[in-house]
Amino acid sequence: MKITVNDHIATLTFANAERANALDEAAWAAMKTAFETVDANDEVLVVILTGEGKHFCAGMDLAVLGSLQNRLAPTPEETKTELIDFIESIQSTITAIERCRKPVLAAIHGGCIGGGVDIVTACDMRYCTEDAYFTVKEVDLGIVADIGTLQRLPRILQPGLVAELAFTGRKMYGPEALTNGMVNRTFPDRNTLISGVTKVATAIATKPTKVVQGIKTNLLYKREHNTEQSLKYVARFSANLLLGK
Image (spheres, rainbow, N blue to C red):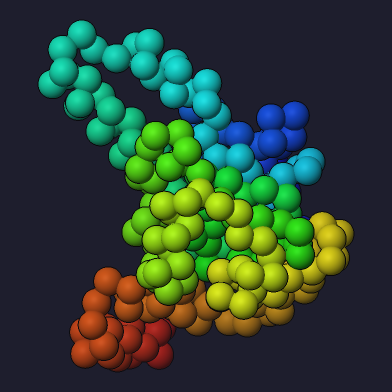
């Protein structure tokens, strides 16, 4: 994964274009490290996530699944433990996107497939080209999507549409994604996409840093708590912010 920083905006780019930016185990680890790095960098105020080549991200490299099968333990119980550890490790990589204190904007073109959908559901904002498509592909591989899509996508799309996408593995293209709230905006091509997303990121970067990070913190808190709990949390958060804490 490539990391560039300009004008307080970090751009994280999937750079395995010849394999549609499919992620092997090293690439998953690199993505987690990248988000932890930009989170710790005080010069970075906003993050853009994108991909090189024709596609945003094809998700899990299928070679990983083959490699995993070849090294599983000899007993069912040990195998189960290894599989859980592997799945939770990949889950933690995607959770690192949410835990990054800086707003994360996904700029999606071409295919956003399988694990790619898991990744963008953890981003704060999503934008795509009109010909981009999203597909919860795991069903066609005999797998239940298990690294975030089924947990995060229902907060973005209405549950019936999530179920349809997960059960059928069909493609949802840019216009449908826009209509249903998967993305904030669509663009004609990748160049205008990157330009448009950069303008949004630049606007965010001009706002007070602690306030922007506080907004992200409170939006994430509300996902897991009811309104009453969230109001109490934000009252205390704002009091600390106003006191300079």
